[in-house]
Length: 547
Ligand code: NAP
Image 1: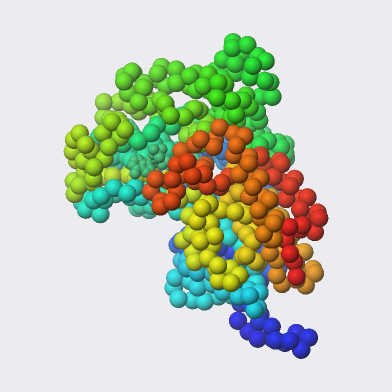
Image 2: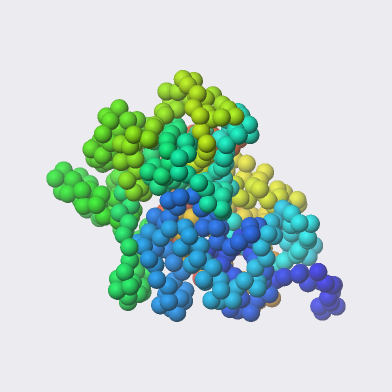
């Protein structure tokens, strides 16, 4: 940091005008935008490579459940014309290649520092800048701090005694080893049946000697219906990119899938069944997002549809006792995040796959050789923890972020996050969360949402520079209004009953209990969110104090 004199006054020039923390999809696009503008920016990535989610999650079966061509960046026509998505739902290795291809193409690597994990970020009120401390001991300052920390980047391990004593291989899916894991001939345990567990179980069932799934609660899953994309099909997709992205910008979830606008009760049961049968055979989230809107809001409608899915599970799983265990009884379809699957239910028809229902026989402990439940002891070579994440706020909590008056963000958010538009926090000036809790981007097909938030943040910074401002901060009133609005919207959707990260529940994190909703997600849909933040910008950033 250097001292300079402006108009006779001492001022401190930060090391960088902007620092971005995190170089996943979000950080990459933000970096591209600022480099393009010639801004002095550096991006700090804690890992040894870029890509965030696609760098870390290397477990077998990891892939998009957004259509690949709706997930890729939309900002560069050249990029769109060059990249060939090989599958409708692209797998992790290909996605990581894509991220690196983008960074290479736009010469971003020279602005990225790897293995640069931020330990603390403190706001310096005297000079209106952020002082960062890295784990490697370095210190850095910047005027504006942009966080691109990821929504699901803080994995959580179950609180089960003995995990450290296990003598075989064990890892959380997020930390699946980078070197190949030999599965052939191995006895493998998977704990957890969320979207990750479902992907990994389906993929390894026919590769391992024995697979034992430890399920606490089942999820409602539906077929992914993946397929390859030929060169000719990719050409057709390229010709339609503009339409595709326009459509995504108009739907609540940022996908091409849009709700069936007919009223659930206006059509006959036969018509409802015809729609559901069609959607069950179609790719992606259509079964969830192209359904009747009442599925999300009306218990009776939701129950009827859930029974349709339950019947499909019964028809796919041969053993009726196992089938019933795989059907959720404590919540309806789509109340929690729907895992999309490829032959998941058929895995349970295999002789080498076993389901342990933890509601009947809970895990007592991990032993040096395996897992002991209240009923029996199991031996394993490998234990896979597919036990989820401290979603959205977890990554913020891991950094010692302090704002005005030394207030710690993790203290402010102890009961759940409060934000202005999911983008800013009162008391934490000059910081923009590019994909924060309560923002529209986090509840959508992620890149579609983050492109809008990054563009918004970039315009805000340009506004600051044009006016010579050095400080911006959300007012407490604006934050309160937005946070109340986000909370009120939870009351409109059945999702408020979810025992999952949607409501901030995580049994492995202190204080993240069921029934104590942490309002992480904006439920108003992407178009409404984007028009709201655009209007705020149009009114010269009403709700922010700029000086
Ligand atoms: P998750 O949905 O939170 O699931 C965690 C699983 O672990 C649940 O089945 C949970 O059981 C179980 N679990 C947690 N602690 C446990 C314990 N102590 N004992 C036994 N079981 C325990 O996590 P996830 O599957 O990693 O998925 C998280 C999110 O990542 C998804 O919702 C999705 O948004 C994203 N994701 C996306 C993709 C994709 O795009 N293709 C793929 C995977 C994940 P309970 O249900 O009983 O708590």
